[in-house]
Amino acid sequence: MPAKRDDGVELTWPGKHRVALPKARLRRVEAHGASEPRGTLIRGDNLRAMAALLPKFSGKVDLVYADPPFATGSLFHLESNGKTAYRDSWDKGVPGYLQMLYERLWPMRELLSARGTLWLHLDWRVSHHARLLLDEVFGRDAFRNMVVWHYGGRGAKAVAGQMPRNYDTLLVYAKSPVAALNRAKVATPLSAEAARAMGYRRGDDGRWFKTAPRGDYTDASVARLESEGRVHRTQSGSVRVKYFLAERDGAVLDERLVGDVWDDIPDMMHAPKAERTGYPTQKPEALLERIVEMASKPGDTVADLFCGSGTTLSVAQRLGRRWLGCDESDAAIETTMQRMTIAGAACDVSAV
Image (tube, rainbow, N blue to C red; front, side):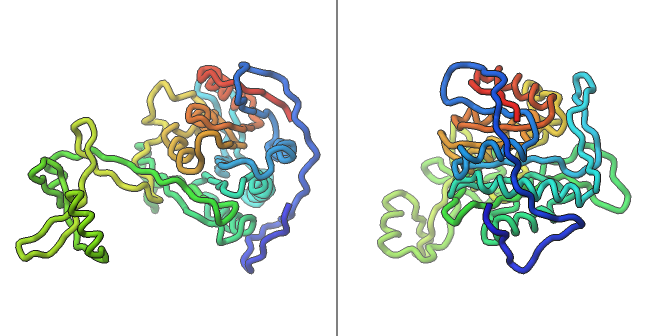
């Protein structure tokens, strides 16, 4: 692994240390399906799993999504039978948690391709600590975004002295400067009243538009825009550029680029019933669809080394990505395998 990046700012805790990766190899215990490409699902400690994966996959993974425990101090159970899914408590408290995370960020970085990104999913408890760890492992210049996933209220009672906490954070870091995210758009249907309230008007051709000053457009550019029907001339003769609302299947849509606040994806409480597995802390497919589509393309390799219920792997399979998954929880592996079987995925299940 590369030397530590020393930018002069470092998060420390009692017992902080770098660890050498253990020697490990994968032992295939099950094979499902015969088609290619095959996915790889690993049962065991993800630090050992990454040590076993690096000889083959170093620099070849285009997206690592990491949804580790959130340092809640809780024990989580399956809804169906009450069996333990995983434990989120640490012998040394937050320092023990940070050491666990620190040890795993280094090999995650080594797995990434030059255009790869890591998306670390956390909440208010340790995300501020984790960003300093990521700055150390990746370098401050590798930071791309902190996405706020505002999933809405859950009907919980208000806690005295604080506001409701209704969001998670996704810390996005790039392996190298060539890494870039794909643009994504979100479209919101609008009524005629809503369109007018936003400053749009309906033209003679029936399309909804608003205008803005020509700005830096040259005369040649204005001529091109006019040929496209995108120029509006005022009574005084000044040029304004038309911006149209999108239309699809007869509906008028407010179409915008996805930014770093995601408030259009509800949590699992409001997800389709068929999607719910009963695994605690499951994330919705809509969330992972957006991440996978923004951070990879068909044929790329996606890894989730805290795979839990298998949402990332299920979405990656459906979107034509190769995938690597790992979890040390038997409940997680069983839940993931059920989803992948339903999806018709071919995969190898290995132990480490």
